[in-house]
Image 1: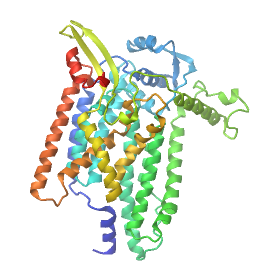
Image 2: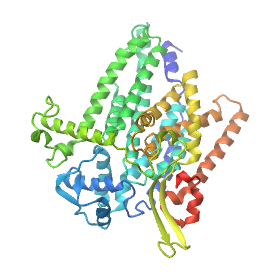
Image 3: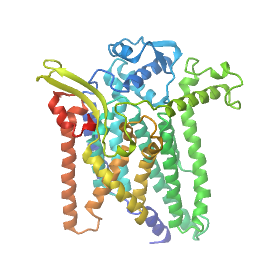
Image 4: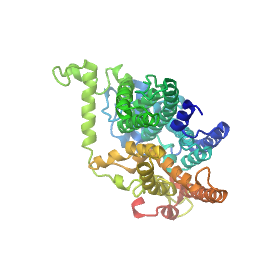
Length: 515
């Protein structure tokens, strides 16, 4: 091999060539997962958990361009709304909401397609994003692990994971954050390969180990920044993914320059790659975030829209009035978040999230005999955002292996998976004074799946392992996938609001903290 080929092999490693099978598995399980998610999606025809906010706000944005206050308290408005009465908003009073608009615009897309009174429409957009994320995680796993088989397994696990399944069928914002964070991660993986291809070619062409080529044009990094801007425009927690993935992509660049033999690779990478990455990604993220507020800028009825005019001499004076008003809005929203400490029945601690010790009940109704198909004295109808323990518990153990492989073996794949946990889970340890919930874990669910796939890849053994080892690995993985499937079937009733005998519901609540 010439120098260019050697550099390419060193920088990129093994690349799978079975393009057909690389798509077949993820597409198959995305299709199956999509059928499961769209089946009876409109059931129940009631606002589930925080749908009481986001579904109604989506309709408001279709009507007014911004979130308007509704007439009366939520428990009085919800029955009117679900029976088709859309005259529930105050037409001149914007609502003080604490999450940016992107996620609600996405939910509004389904409401526009199928009508604001359709519970199928309320959930259509999140079901679509949930289905697409199955395909995405499968393709991402294939690229990371160089195996179409492991890519298919990743898609299978996502398709049959309960937490993801419930969120894909509920009109909430958190799975939208997950989708855009996953899209950004996938784009950065493509950028990693794309930039290394060019670094290898340019370094070989120079024939010397100088300061290294400057890669100004990084289109996939810009796509990642756009996705991260949309994540931030859904919930501010997207900022944590921006920070984690921004550092991750720069570390990848440093590693590439070191492998290419660049002199002073650390300083060169920081100044040639790090500064440019920070400038370009921050500009795109910020621009995308501000653009997400277009509806608010375009109206005069949004909350605090005219604050700067009404409060001359206050706030950040060097900003134009519209941005000064938006900044004040953000200050108030931050104060709300930081002061959210009121107790809640289903609040939980991030230390317990991975083992699913306190799942969030999204919906629960008792049913008497003869009501809603109940055939015994007492029935339950529930939606519990409980993760598949067959996946989450193994992922908990996998974290220790990931840290070891990253720290001791310098396995970039382990570090990349850990970056997802850093962006989605770690920040909440610094916010334990707030009222927070286990269902936030959906934002980093793809990296839970990838952590499990990493473990299964170790069980399978390296490509050069002997036939006996590979057969044993396939048997172990096959048995595990059957366990995941059985786990999904067992909890199906409490993920889809099926009316079942109360005793059957209790069978599925293994621990008192799950009730």
